[in-house]
Amino acid sequence: MTDRGLGITVTEHLLREQRETPYATGAFTQLLNELIVAAKIIHRQVSKAGLVDIFGSTGSENVYGEEIQKLDEFANRTIIRRVIHTGHIAAIASEEDADIIEVPHQYPTGPYILLIDPLDGSSNIDVNANIGTIFSIRRRIKESGPVTLDEILRKGSEQIAAGYFIYGSSTMLVYTTGKGVHGFTLNPALGEFLLSHRNIKIPKRGKIYSVNEGNYYYWSEPIRRYVDSLKEKDPAKGKPYTSRYIGTLVGDFHRNLLKGGIFMYPADTKDPKKPRGKLRLLFEAAPLAMIVEQAGGAASDGHRRILDIEPETLHDRVPLFIGSSEDVSELERFLNDGGSS
Image 1 (cartoon, rainbow, N blue to C red):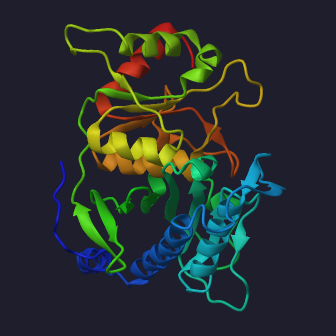
Image 2: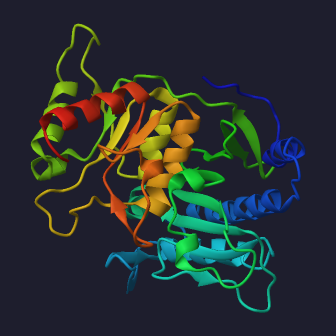
């Protein structure tokens, strides 16, 4: 499914794509390069975990009422500082901020809007588990003036690029511009991301399911029946599925993207705080949905294609079922036959 050891840097790869795109100005390439620099800075800080004072909460809460971790704040600030002065963006929307972040008047603006989840899985920082950064890039609708909310509240199918950085045993960038999915691994000795996974394709069916089963009794009956079915030996599919759950969306998604399977975060039917799911449509679900579809997989809220959902607010949440196409289709059949998620 991958083509390793090619030795092509991410900059070389971006320039090749740029040359193949009519009327390309290089602005997108420069924007993505700034995101890469920001990720290298975050990687350096993550690798110091335990050696410097980056553990724990800042004492503040984000827009969702969640405690902001010190590394969350560092990642958010780092990305914004790297891209806001480039002249390539018109605005930024961050999972950590309630409102659109406008480009200060002293800086030029560009045609793109950047959406970021600066540090996915920050609760795993102090246990040295995978964490990540998710990004989505959209082209603005208007030619000039301040970015308005309607330019951001658009279907995921309108993204022009999406990707993530994963900080783990190695640091990787996985991204798509609608021409397949490619992965690059950071070589610390060179300080460069090198092409390690060309044209990633997710298996049509996997053998892994990823879900927080501690929420089992908060799920609808069809979801419980589907998860129960994965644990049973099926003559047609062989041995039961294996449960693998890190608790970091990027980490669980990345494993399943390469090996096949399904990641699930259903709505909690008995939790009034999560009636529409936990994961953020614009900052988490839509970017990963673009990636998985480009790799041949699928992403659904249980009834609708994620990329077809039009958000109502900047911080809309959705249930998410994402991964191998046959696994997601099977999950949808359980829901359609047995009720709502």
